[in-house]
Length: 259
Ligand SMILES: [Zn+2]
Ligand SMILES: [Zn+2]
Image 1 (cartoon, helix red, strand yellow):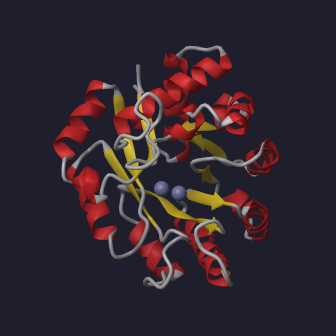
Image 2 (cartoon, rainbow, N blue to C red):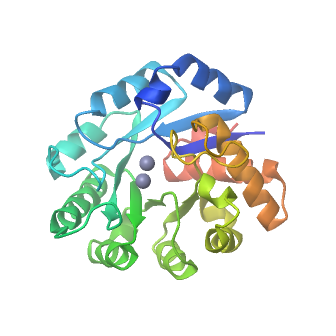
Image 3 (cartoon, rainbow, N blue to C red):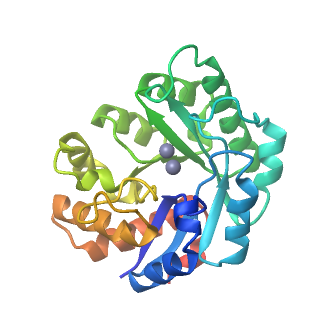
């Protein structure tokens, strides 16, 4: 079997402190690589260092919408940092109206900056959206995000939102949330998304999937996300792992990871 964790934060101290174990667990569970996603510019050097040190770790560059009052990236800066061969995507970016309230025009402006930087750098977008689906899709359309492509990560929205993103050529990534008993809507979306436009992720250290719910999450647990999707679709975990690995390689232009 073969799996890829398309979205994790292994640079966060909980996981970074045990990197040898995190990598050993990945190896034992056939997780061939993981994408360590940036959340702000201050931590970017650590994220890049992990990608430079470990062949199976890739990274992205971006500033998460939940980080208010941090150094604001401009297009040129993002494009410059995205030139590194181990930086394979731009993000995570997007909109989050759940965590932050009030005038969030700065989030929308930051999101547009990332879409423009992704276009210029030719690297796909990693989009986070929470309680902001309509604005997220509107800005994606206004900025022609379909020309850039990317992934809607940790998907928790309706089928209609998934459909709109799929129509723009985006991939839909499912996290451990899909394994939670009460996640009825997400399970339904996971049954309907075309397999060839699906990715799996942990978003670790958060959101550990069942049967590890409540524990510290790690990339090795992405296998449980694959198990749940396999169950929902009546296919094998092996097929979910293989196809989502191929999808990851296609989206992020890493053909060599698929043996
Ligand atoms: Zn996110
Ligand atoms: Zn994340």
